[in-house]
Image 1 (tube, rainbow, N blue to C red):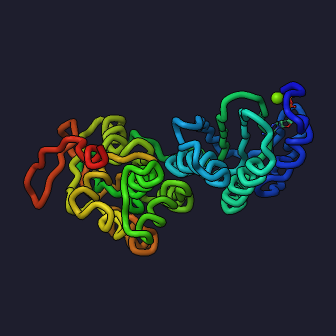
Image 2: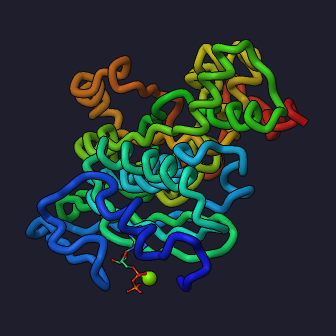
Image 3: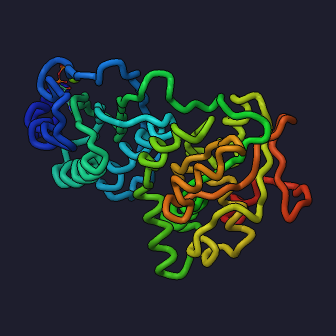
Length: 325
Ligand code: ADP
Ligand code: MG
């Protein structure tokens, strides 16, 4: 970056990003040199992911800066969680229309608090001028051969989801003025969109119990379908088992809430497949009420997705969205 901002690039980096996030002893060199130097745990496999957020595309321009900082890291943490891995180091490529110090302070605070909560160090990045775009690269590690992938599921596996999908989609609709809800429900849903909770601890624990895992970024039905397709199987989801929050039901009613839970994006929950013989162990080690997940269906041999309601196959169109049209 050149001298186009009042604050020089070096000043900006030093002020906001030099010690942003956790301090880790395995960071030999962090922000400030030409590249970061990291000590990977001996024998571990490195897990790497990156995601870009473009203002107006992946978040509304009205979103608070702290929420943008949180989200940029959260979406990457969710990918690492879906691999069953432990996150460790992040890089941040930031494109800014201007060096707005208040925006940067809040953005860095939102990023840093989530990073510290997951012991993630910000070890480098890049800063350029242009339309607001935030790219985070996240590195983590996993014991060799133990990562969860989308591909390990088999017919007969039990299919689970964490959290209460649909909340973020409703929160976005509220943020954009397309949906209204009672004040407490609206505040909750909006927060589920703005500050998603990546299921990092659950993902790491699931390494022991799940055969396949994916995070829900584009909608539960579609993302569960990706897991099934990668595993070479199909799936059945039982509509009445879909976990929906009280706030979502207050906003939409029980049926539209579950339809939105199937189709809405941005939830960053985990969908995972567990061999039936291991379900008892899973639920004993990680009590569902405490770890916040629920069985919603099964993987089956026939390809494609089937949705049932009280035992009957349901016709399904993506009408959850039309509710807001
Ligand atoms: P270079 O020209 O070698 O790419 P830069 O001036 O872009 O160096 O960056 C200087 C240092 O600051 C590097 O260590 C880089 O990783 C880090 N850095 C730049 N921008 C950011 C950012 N937004 N967040 C964290 N670290 C950054
Ligand atoms: Mg650079």
